[in-house]
Length: 253
Image 1 (tube, rainbow, N blue to C red):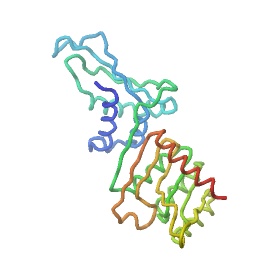
Image 2 (image 1 turned 45 degrees about the vertical axis):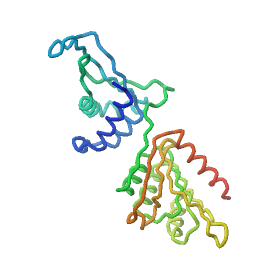
Image 3 (image 1 turned 180 degrees about the vertical axis):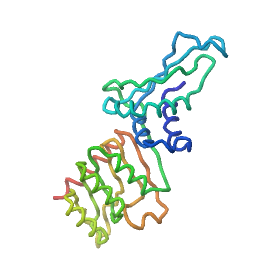
Image 4 (image 1 turned 60 degrees about the horizontal axis):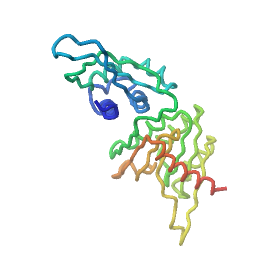
């Protein structure tokens, strides 16, 4: 059984199978498993019934050390979803699921890229809620009050936030509100003939390992448009967005 395919299937089932939508901490579980790896450990003992020569197998879920306490708390849910996805063969049957620490310096097994066309605002809000340390935002237009409120809530919990917006009249209210709340916000001036050129980015970096990007502006009207929002849990990919953010950020005095 392919380890990467198995773990990817577990995550996809958690996202889309209604059987698991009532798990209280489903989003946390998805994030935890996205940073974990799995091993299949064949055992010497025979199952002893049904299929001749079939042996037991343990599925070992290795979680990053900082997430181990959450993993132990969610162990019944992990056991349930792993057992649901596990595919028994003539050689092996599932004996149990074990939670173990992911060996430090082991590269993450999962690199996840997704794209959504509906519920874009909810996807952005969930990404902001998942932040533990920092959020960097570069959007051409920002007037969405729901997203603004989530940013401020995170700022008040100690998360470091930086915002880049284009110099547009419709951004003025949000820019002033962000400044009053003590958020590090910078306005990127337009340039070129009659100021026709502008910073047109729409991306948000979370904890330097997750990015949301696409056509979706953080504006009031964007929720009524046909828009695209792609997400990526991929450090190498995210670092390119971070480099672009810092290049623009450092150009503004």
